[in-house]
Length: 174
Image (cartoon, rainbow, N blue to C red; front, side):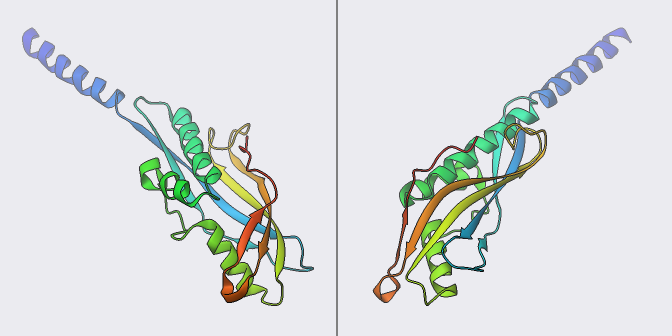
């Protein structure tokens, strides 16, 4: 009887260790918000949110969320380099539901030039809204933070081959 109890305890111990060593995955949300500066009473743009995930090989949900935030940061910092945006804003970097198949810059340019056809040069502020639990929003236990990423100029050119020129360098949002 003692041998059977010892075997059962050993099996339960192995099962418990396997569960304890399981990966922990958590996510944080990000969303781009565009404020139009150069047109009075202009409505800005708010784009769909996307998520970053972080996975740790032990039970540490806040560390996993910090990794999710770091993955979002990599994606966000790559927005004006299309080749980097493709790789950093993909599932390979644990970014999910990224809403810009052709890139963020072309989408903003298209949306603003379509919405305000009489304006050839539109000054904008590009913001990022972060949401999530502890670890997702630096310095906060839980909640939301809106940070300005860049100030840009959207210029219309013939045949709608406009450009978006940003006036300051992207900065890490901490």
